Length: 138
Image (cartoon, rainbow, N blue to C red):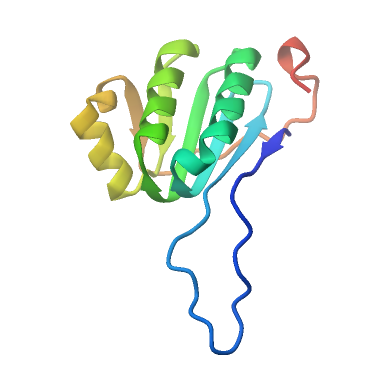
């Protein structure tokens, strides 16, 4: 499994400090023999841009259908919308979003990207196969 994470370190939360109200965004890439999954969490914004780009490039290179686990996304800006559009048009099959929160569903609707992606309300699970990956993706 290939993994990419992004985000500045959060200040330590101790006595007399207020917890941060925003969540640092992250992206993780998982590849099986059948498909690629991008797991997004926290704020998917410009601060995550370089890692989103790297993750999308990896998904395109592998050449398998892509699904995005978006259930833990708390915010998405145009960087995230751009990533969805790129994946929807450059990877085989239809892009699938798993359990996107209302903030992401709203963006799918207003940008009309929802017309070119499938939305699942339940996680179909991810294969845990251990065989060789296609096209030397390992």
